Length: 331
Image 1: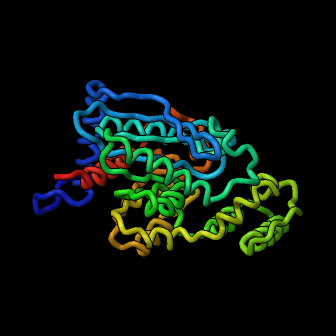
Image 2: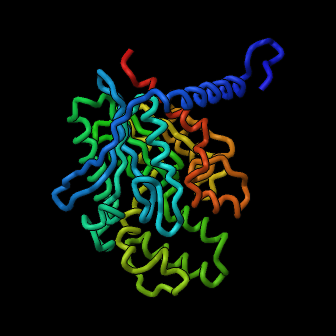
Image 3: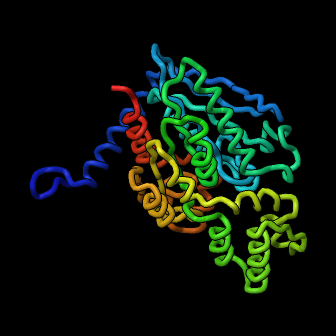
């Protein structure tokens, strides 16, 4: 990026310089930082949850980020057995650790190592996920190794983070690829691009029924993956929530991060979240997709990125998050 005609950097130039500086510090930081990596557990009283702690060596308390994964059987690392391995959240945790920020990421109840906590998905609910995030937060806040607690939610996890943050006593919230619209509206939009008219009509009927709080067992085979009867209780609990309204209620600092090439959540969602909470910081990252990589708007390449853990994260993602967390540290 060239300097502006006045001899000073443009806003884009400043951001590019920040990304370059972060890239250089990332390169040197991996050789210098000492990071403790170990498993952690949480006894919820209704099952044990399993997670991973990354803790930089420090003589004073460091900020700690509770990373909350997205929808479905997405595990602590950001991987989904139906969608492939990309390690998006694992890689993000390491970016934080190499810059003196601790993190805990965990398998949600009913997922991966935490499957036994709720083995039947009929018993899953948004309220249970929120309660688990609050319980993790209290455990972290009681640990003297940690300073400010930040809740970071990816995709559907952004809603859980916003709902949990007030009870958790979080110092800040980060919404990463989080929707502003009720999730039934997002599903309608996504399915309208994929389904033939007859299936779309039945899908809308199912969404209407679940939105009203009524299960519907008459699910055509092609729609079972989304609307199977066993997952309908969870969908009913999810469709009650309004992400923008939850975000608006937050009193603590917040950061909204959204990629321009996200196939699942739109830039308009990020702008709506910002309208709901105007004092939140907004970071729109050009070219970033839902798994936090820079990928062109090409369906084949987008889908391939969901199964490629070796693709680097968008460099600006680390810059924006670390700048935000740095602003929370005592001066």
